[in-house]
Length: 113
Length: 448
Image (cartoon, rainbow over all chains, first blue to last red; front, top):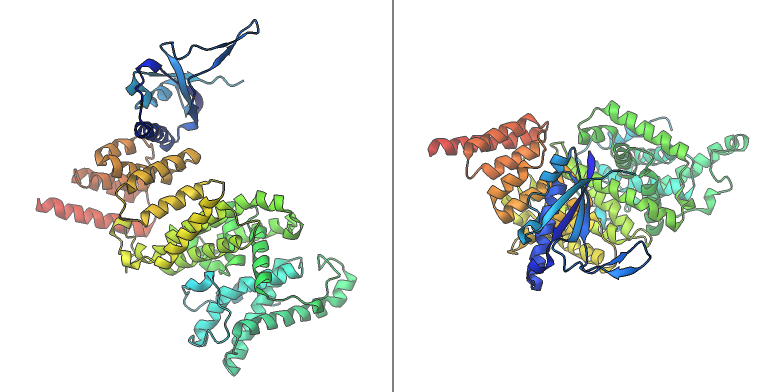
């Protein structure tokens, strides 16, 4: 089995402001989806969500705030899965809750150092 | 020490195995056994006291070989069978056994005195004088048994060997009984035990040299062995309900001992004990008169043991009182929801808990249970889709789950999957249950 990184991207502006109950329901959807991958024995690391703010360290040594919430495709989280091929790994993204917010999932094979 | 201890064990335990709830909360009241006939009493005492005597002898005297302690304990019981049949049962049989065991140990030291002087090493610590004595006090028994649990649950042995050893040394099971419980040959069990004992001896493990840090390090392995011991009973392949109960209750008793020591009384220990209490509370309801498994939904709730459920609640609350989280917390909480039949969101909670459990540790049975919960929340159709992705094509439980999910909508498919389930199981109980379902579905189909 090879390992793959799933990166979740979405446009923050299209994300609706959610009530605590809706947030809870969304979390449950994520848990269900990740557990579905785990139930197949394909989960490596459930990963995490990422906060909306960030910093960028540049080659000149300067640190700037990342305008991440402005860009169309912000990275909002990641998960590690295992599969026999890139094709199989890509299929695991089926049903990912980010898709219902107009987002997408990028799947990349991990090239172990 | 001529008679091998396992043979004595077999001799003494020919009587029916018994189910005693109070094992957890031992009685030490003189005369409490008056109601028992002698042929019931000795096997009963053997189960409750043999492992205690072995543990105390072994640890109080730092005997080099567990076998020495086992031989003395066995001889004690042999003497009890002889004397009690002539003179009758003494007023306090347990105290009688302890005294005889103590005297036998003194004899052992006397006989070995000369030998010991010439060849050092019979004792690990040679300057111990038996006359200084030890007591079969409640505290000493608990401490010794705790030490024994840690000796036996040695990670250098395979899990199967650890369980075999735990059953023999901590629970007083005979080789035949262990073989019965595992559905294996006595020879296999004997070999396993032999290897495990050699390993223990070579490892030269002594609890007394273990500090708090080391004990905590090994605790996870100990809890895992006890968990597996319990599961061995709960999901046992053997059809004997009595053996199942015995295995479960022994696991319960040993886990209970861990809660009595401040170092081992962790949140994980409490969570595991809660899990065992909840599961055990349904032992009687779980099989019908023919020994067939009754599904949770079909169980007669009046057969659930409320006392054990209350104990489960108590330990679960304790488990959540301080920091620490484990798969035992999740499993115990799932078991808690199963004992709470009225809550409308029950299956939502259970599904979320199974989700979390899968994220901690994958196992086919967790994946299947999670899929069942998923179907209960989202309906059978979605459950079938979810099940189809599991990739467990040689697992009988997988097919029986699919069969169950199809049973309302597509009887042909349901029957087909039960047939597949039969193909992949070796358990006669399961084959019986699946065959019964096929018969039921076929009759239903013919009527419609």
